[in-house]
Image (cartoon, each protein chain N blue to C red):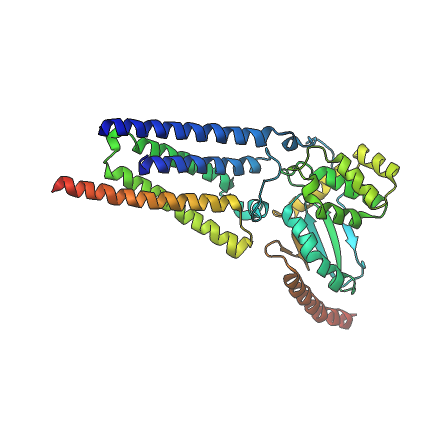
Length: 237
Length: 147
């Protein structure tokens, strides 16, 4: 009787393991093979272009904030939607701070190059920040979980922000900014940026717990530091 | 099913969770599907790499080892072996400590929680509880035998 129970238990165990193995392998196979996971193949031998930061605010603002972000990174979208509006309203518009945005496309994000391409092409028509906002606010509609071909979405966003469709499409389809996007990523790597979003205030890098209060604190520290050094410089003159 | 079989079953589930995160780190699956928490923030943080290797890969190795050990411990020969129960308790206890450290990092340093890390932490805690129960059961078997 005990032996029969033991055999039944072993059979049950084998069946459960086999079921989990099959379901697990099928689930992993699906997420790895689904069309949305394919994404765009980026030529590793592509030449490096020029790393370009997109500026918001006065270039003469006393404090410079540099941001490195990936358009498909959810943390970056969270930063753009929750923290950046305060930074823009309270620090950039008041002339205290200027913000410079560099794209840092991460390898696991398959549609981030398309989004960066759209942002660069929008910049050619002077609307980088409008596209930046559109991309982050709609991230879940075009990311690699949502689609394997985000081109239609990107062209739709260009229309939404009233870009010249012909010029945008010519720029977007030519991919002429890809070397510049690669250069921007290389710049991030050169600065040992290992997380997105990362911001640099007064030469110091921050990536953990970035919120408005934290940014304001570091901006105030930088202002205080500048206030100490500027009179000394003036005195030296 | 015996407790050891349950541990093996849970370890297999944990193995798939770790493999999913590892495939993400390898760039094979695109974005993480994450309905709760900020999985990408955690998995793209510097803390997602340990000794130059993604933490997810260490997770895969851990669960492979645990699954193999638990399966071995279900063999009749080791059924009443207290050392086998102790081995599982040590392995799952290590998993609890490591998961505890990762959870602390998520809450106190990264300020984001990854749903898959939480699932893995729950799995190791349950497996540890089962292992402790197994150690106690084999002790009482040993005592009964010696009496």
